[in-house]
Length: 213
Ligand code: SF4
Image (tube, rainbow, N blue to C red):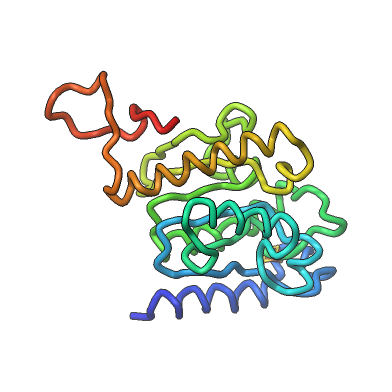
């Protein structure tokens, strides 16, 4: 049985040889994702941008710096989490992903999740969120906890950090959501006991009913 590192490296190799859609043609480098194979927390963004394409690494531009600062604010470093994207080659001019590109590429990210088995998946922006939660709206559902049948992890949608950099009000929401994420991580690790008035005595705690605000 291959180790998690080997399995993730094998996916990265597949990505670097992939021609399932045309995005590989104009891209400088594939961006397979990186981080801790045993991460409790995984981030999934939309697609590589200019700097990610140049370096072959996810979230290394301004948005990446905001993500790292936000992680530091809840006591985590980039090395402790895993970061990937829905698309692994850059769409020209950072245009929005096409539905057929998302369809062709999303399997890589889903396989990475199967290998890592995180406790929490934080989607960054609406593209990553809508793959698992097609009915969700980012303006309504950011910073809320979602469960899906057959998915063993909690989904916690966040705005994309690039959107936070473009808008003061989104930045305010992004920071508040990150504070909640910090509390959710402690909760998932059993380091935080939340009070829930509606919960019957002796009942199993239900995360959806717990207040993280
Ligand atoms: S974007 Fe994804 S599906 Fe398209 S060529 Fe790259 S790895 Fe393959």
